[in-house]
Image (cartoon, one colour):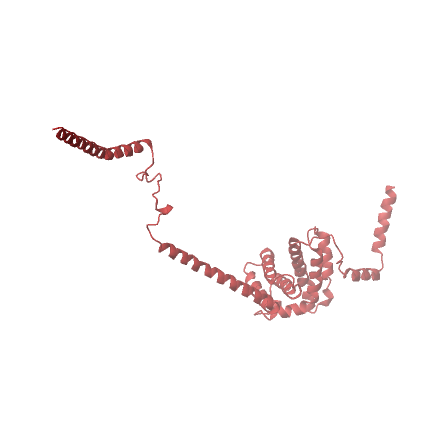
Length: 293
């Protein structure tokens, strides 16, 4: 059974090498149609971000090979089509956490729209597109494609993702050029969205400016309030550093002292009342004796 299996494998390899070249051409033409019917790949924001990273690498490879050969009239050297790059990438990478559909979409549509996208980018540059760094060119292509064709993605997200791609693959100061170009493209391609966002930022800034004024008014009102109003802050606070500040606390000794003071104040009044009663008694005795006489 093992010999039969080995023989079958050998025959399959031999048939593959001796196959008709027209069949190979037909198979390559069929491979150009990307499989967009997959339903098992991830569709989260992280999966879309990973799709952008793989698309940026694939576009970089295509720009330095077939696209460069096409622009330099070396068409005979073209042997690295975008669909071949996509197939090779899927075969050599674990892409189960990548949005495969979006990756194939970018690898198919951006090379097809390369002329229009380069025209959009070049009108906001001070140089030709060919003079751009290849990494910057690939990032700008993805950003311009998303701004023009994927309107469900906010323009701020497009700019932020482009900055993250540059941080991961680009040069140190390349973010200045990428941010400037994509910001101008957003104003051109997403005018309504940019205007609405600008108005919302103005309202937020006006609310933030009005809050300090309200706080200052409350502070002035508290400053003009009467100083003799009893508040908790007017009470002396006792701490470990200020031991000389003491508060009157009701204890037994202070209560006894206050009672003694009250008794002392009441004593003269009682003595005066006794003297008055004695004087009245002597007067009555004198009157009685006079009546007897």
